[in-house]
Image 1 (cartoon, one colour):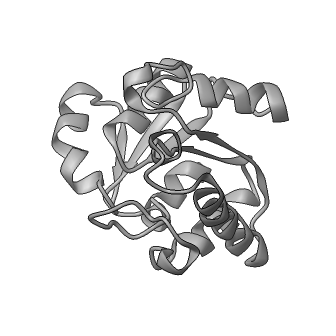
Image 2: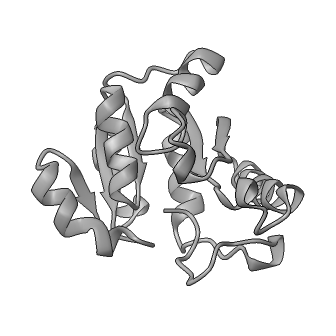
Length: 167
């Protein structure tokens, strides 16, 4: 949703390429809504990338958004491999509830925006309204998402869906 889609995980700060318009969309969204970043990063537990590098990538994204004027309330990272079946890894809603407890953000009735059906599943499980953006993996997940979650809003990008999120 924020990072351009790649064949491999973004493992270094130098690999970060943000989707055009995403930074400004987050900045504008944060003027009216609490913005929390929730991300699955199984590469940490799998040891396929050093945890320090993945955390540096994440911090680079947060710093870029903040430098552009976005107010990021917080962020939650699930480092677990999917085989662990933890409660925090999307499609489970654990990270959303953790964010609510940590920062007092409203989950039920709030928005969960992402580029994968697992993002939508986590949002639905937490009682959120959901938006699938067609950037990144969203194009691949759009058909299944529309079929399984007909109430999910689909937008070409975060910037294109901004009006709906602010309504």
